Amino acid sequence: MISLKKNTCRVLVVALMTLSFQSARAGMIGTEQAAAGTAPVERSMVLSVLDRAETVAQLQSQGIDPAMARERVASMTDQEVQKLAGDIQTAPAGAWSTGATVAVLIVAGLIWYFAMRK
Image 1 (spheres, rainbow, N blue to C red):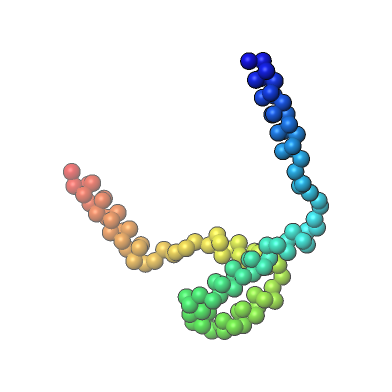
Image 2 (cartoon, helix red, strand yellow):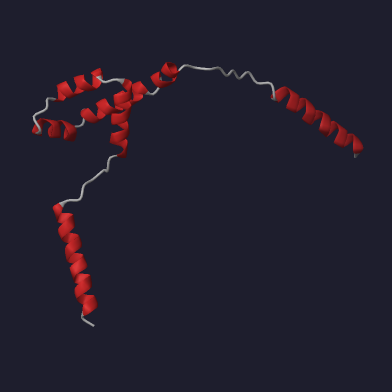
């Protein structure tokens, strides 16, 4: 029994010593290098939004050429692109339409009418 415990302990010690030495390297990186990894992804995300048919239609309805909008995004700084990408990701997906307002008012009116008819 003691021999089994000693052998188990020896195996565990050897395993821990062998497995604990991994070749991980850490080093300092500059802010330019850290920011360079995210800017192309965000820029491509903004450009992909500009490629959507709905976005093109909205831009054209406001008198903006979609090609000029793409050129503007290409000339933006990384900070401007990051802010724009953040705004796109946090923007609400839909809007409150007139039909939705009317529907809510009708439902609220019906609830009030039937609640007061006691």
